[in-house]
Amino acid sequence: MSSQKKGILDRFKDGEVVIAAEGYIMELERRGYCKFGSFVPEVVLDRPEKVEELARELVYAGADMCQAFTTLNQRAHEIAKKVAEETGVLFCSGVGTTNVYDPNSPEKMQKCEELLREQIAFSAKYGVDYICIETLWDYGEASIALKVCKEFNIPAVITLAPVDFSGEMKTFDGYKLGDALKLLEDEGAACVGLNCARGPETIIPLIRDIRKQIKGPLACVCLGYKTTEEECTWYMLKHPRTGVKSFPMNLLAHCLGRSDLEWYAKELKDIGVNYVGMCCGNCPTYTRTIAMEFGRTPPAAKYVSDLEKNSMKGANRTTGDRYAALGEFMGMAI
Image (tube, rainbow, N blue to C red):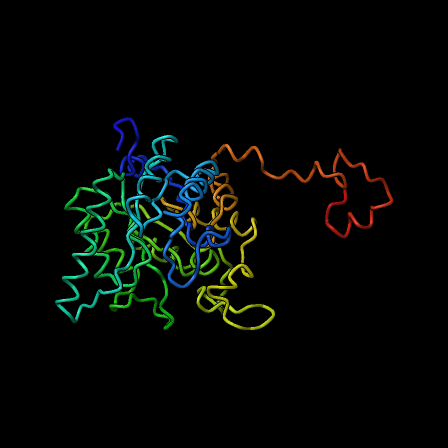
């Protein structure tokens, strides 16, 4: 980390909010540079300039961090570090589930720790400012990852994925989400919270409840898709026309509107969340909306829409009465 850059721990200590912008895999798939199924971001090798372009767009929109689009780790770290150093934002990497964690198998537990140590050691070599341990389903795996981060003296932001369908909101290894996050906080995580699986409407009630247990920095990094009480995670979303499950091919049928993001950011401010943002389904416009709701003026604020300048509305109205009915129908009339 640059000695002139304010680290994430100092930002939290000073009561600052960190704007997080993730969601590379879904946005690059939408742009035609990734594919669902394997979810391996070959674009990091095939078209690295596209990854760098998106990273710069998110920083331009107001992100305080630039995350390595990991899996193909070396090139991903190089891209993120370059953007972070040139823009002055925090440089981080992400560590997700190893898919081998099993508390009933000593061999798998050992393998899990080996895989986590390999990834975290790689990030340490590149000098990340912190690591996102994210989208985990088990408290135990998150605890192992945190232990390894502490060995390398790297701050860890840990977010669990709220995917329990039982209504009890537990991790796969049986801990209530709030209890698991409290344990991780006590074990030394820089920040704990939730990410992925749910959109604003269904993650906010969970975060509000968890805030009662978490006294330190709290994180919320939700989906960029509209989940509801009936379809509370993106795995449950159904296409509005066909009724077929939307994940992952038809998630664009459930995109958020900007007013959804404004509401989400206001709720996070009210709850007192310290690490805020979006993951899968995010885009620069969403990041800009959140950043501005938190009082920021990112460079992208220059291009915020101003409907008063539309030809059918406001002082610049030029359409006369002929199109008044159309303007009224569009909600654009004076």
